[in-house]
Length: 444
Image (cartoon, rainbow, N blue to C red; front, side):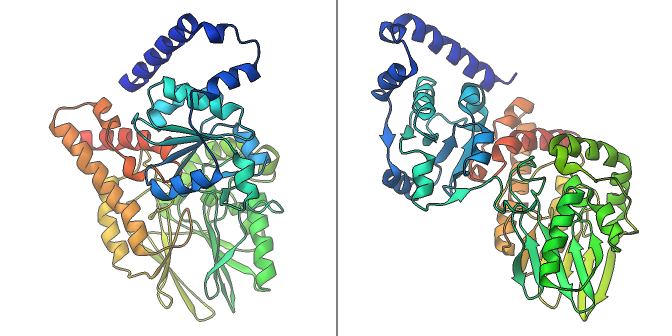
C-alpha cells in the first residue's frame, strides 16, 4: 500500500473515532433526513448559476458525481463541466479520493441526483482535510433541464455505436467513441471507427470491438453510399480495433494489419475475446477471432477511386503494430493510438515511450492539417502534440529526476500530473503510467 493510501486510511480511522466519540448530537439522530439536516449546516452549497461561474473561473476544478455508474448510464448522463469530471460513488469515496485528488487544497464540487448523497460526500471530504469543497445542491437533473452540457454513457441509443458517424472531411467520416473505458453501456465503442468513401468502394479503419458493433457501423455506412466495404485496416492488435475482423471478412472485405499487430492477435486474441465477452455479455454474440488477410511492415498503399490512402507504420509507439492512415491530398491523418488529446494516453507494458517520442518526429513531418485520433474528436497537430509527445517528454524527465535522486517507485507515483487531470481516464491511468515509465527507464 502506498504512503498516501496509508495516510488516508489513518485519517479516516481517526476522524471516524472522533465522529463517534466527540459529536453527541449525531449519536441521537434517528434517520437519514435528520443526518442531512445536521450536515447542511457544515457544508457550502451552491446553485446552478454559481457552479457555472465557478467552472468559468477555476481551471483546476474537480467535479465529482457521487452516484453509481449504472445510475449515470440509465438516468440521463452526468455533468460535462469542461474541467476535471469524475465519477466516484459515495460508497467508495473515502478510499478512492486520495489517488484521484491527492492535493488537499484542490477545489472540488460534488453532486448527485436529488441532493441526498452529495451533502454527505461534501461533509466527508471536509472531514478528511480537503479545504475547498462545495456541494452542488440543485443536482444533475437541474443542470440537464437547463440545457447545460452533459456526458452520456451512450449518445446514440438506437444503435450499438456510442455516436453515429460524423463527416470529418469530404468523403471521410468517423464514429467517435466514448473516451471512457469500454463498458457494457457503450458496447465497447470507446475508440474511433473511421471510413473513407470512394467511387470504387469504402475503406474502414478499425474493425470494432465486436461483431454487432461492426454490423452497426456497416449499417451507417450503407445510409451514405451504395459502395461496398472493400478494405478494413486495423490500427493495432487491441480488441476494439480487431475483434470485428470476422464480420467484415464475411461481408467480402479484405482486412489489413501490420505484421506486429497480427502477431499480437495470434498470441493474445483469444484472451482479449474472452474478456470482451464477459464484459459485453449478449452484445458480444457472434464475435469470433479471425486473422487479417494481409500484413505489411512499413507501408501499404491503397489506390481506390482516385483516392490515395497510405497505411504506414512510422515506428514504435503506443502498442505493437500501430499504424496511421495518411490521405496526402487532403492532408488528413487517421492517427490511431499514435496521438491523444481528450483522454490521458495509456502506457502499456510493451509501450516504448522513448521510441514513441522519436516516432513523433516522423509523424509530425507528414504535415497533417486534420488529425483523427484513436480516441476523441478530430483535431490538429498542436493539440495532439501537447497531450501526447509533450506529456511523454514531461513524464520521462520527471522519472529521470527520480532515478537520479535515488528515488523509488513510491516517488514516481508522486510526480505532479495535475496539468493533465482534466483528461478523461486520468484517474484510471495516471498512476499506472508513472509505474510503467519508471520500470521502463529503470533499466535503460
